[in-house]
Image 1 (tube, rainbow, N blue to C red):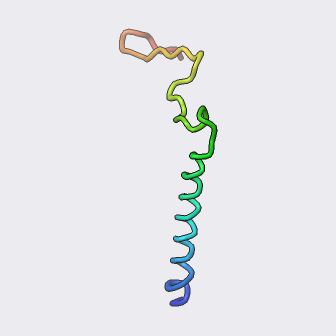
Image 2: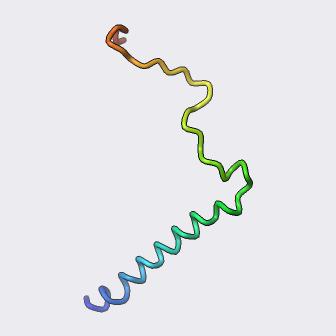
Length: 58
């Protein structure tokens, strides 16, 4: 168990960190329109918030 704690677990942690670093850094090589953040709201969707004045549809 000491071998796992001293060698294998830190190696797994470093590999996960390196994979995340590569995945995040890959945005540099994307086209400009894909490197932008995703839009928050969807187009073409009508959203009407529920209020106390509006009756609930059941």
